[in-house]
Length: 265
Image 1 (cartoon, one colour):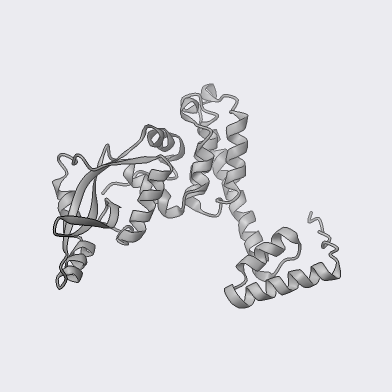
Image 2: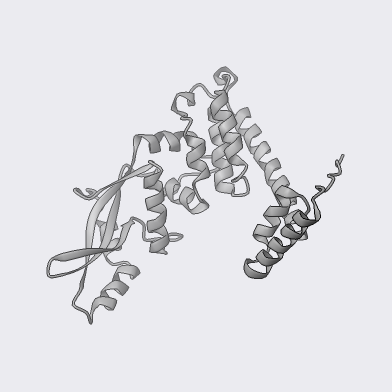
């Protein structure tokens, strides 16, 4: 049964303010923020109504995935979940359930909080980490977690032994990570969230082919061409990327192999 929602009884001045605001927003930057305004304060545009219906669909999928994950737990392993973790996870997931990768991870997090084999690895900060991740971040982290360490480079330019950074923390030369600037941003985000760490005082042994790919990437070749007629030269600083202890626990709890299978280069 659908319960009718009575529109807010705004004063004329408030109505005029909202109309002017949303009209200005619509004419300048589109209807997204205007739709959000009406979703919160009353009234639905057609676009916002479609978003509401899509959200309801995604919420049903989230409920189904969570139920399936819980059903997969052996009965002898099911325990009472930590109230703080479950409530924080459900609250944070509100903003992410339309992103399949993040929805899967929230589902795994909540289910594993009820599994005695995983509950000790579940941290109350995991929901906040998840809500700050993008789909791209989740995909990149899912790939990194398969390696004890990954070759890492920072691209530099120099002249007269004075070096400056061009682009930091690139580790993969493959799709969907060929936009190195986006990859660099995501790597920095994962590092800021405490999931991965960078070290430039050693290199990854046995992975020389990966360094070769990074040194011969289209990005670095273009950088050398750009600097060819200047006083600068291009160079590469080699290092390694690895999961932190927090990152290992996060991967164990949030990356269910059924919904988010490991990837290999």
